[in-house]
Length: 301
Ligand code: PMP
Image (tube, helix red, strand yellow):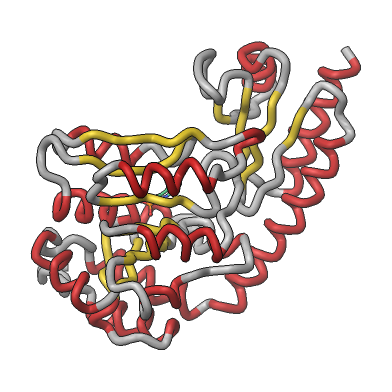
């Protein structure tokens, strides 16, 4: 531990590149996907310039942009948080955004955007497009292959979710070599510790175990959604991630009730499109059963 880490995480890059059938030059390893977002914003957003994204989505895109003195243009999602393709394309054409952030599967709604829609955005965009696939292992369709056709596309991935390595802080970006050349100019040196690089290599080798855990989470998620659907006072949204968004009559009341029972879900406050919504992680079988039972008990009074 007295030596500095490999600054560009070369061995890890090679392992990940070969997993995708790309060259190490197409990959950047970062301290969580959060750092990739920060590097992209640092590279492309000057004060007064804009990013384009939709809302509700992962708030870090807008937060990092504002920290750089930039502006975030946020197109609202449509009914039931479905992606509003027409409105978004209008914004792509009329707003001069320097970077477009698309999160699919989307945090916190769990919804996805189709390949056709992503291609539609890429065909119209004259900016950098970031496709955040932090939760993609819980869905079927990654669109990372689009980096071959679109040199302005960065696909983000993380080991924090499906690989269970959030504490090690390892994420990565996939993009064309031209785009990576620019991003490497901004990457902080020694951005991933040697312990984290090692932890990432070990977990990536455990593919069979990771796939088993993913399959279990997906099965539990679908079972929980079915349970939610049986409850009259709850509206549940379909999820392609490892969490579930649901709507209740009074989210503060339900949140406090669950906390009293030792169950912590995400509360989104009283204002905005997520008012009266809560989000739960898909946890262990036991935790999930406890949550469902607590909500059923509440419904039955
Ligand atoms: N993107 C999305 C959509 C996320 O939800 C998160 C984590 N909450 C991240 C990126 C960042 O993940 P990490 O920095 O842990 O890799």
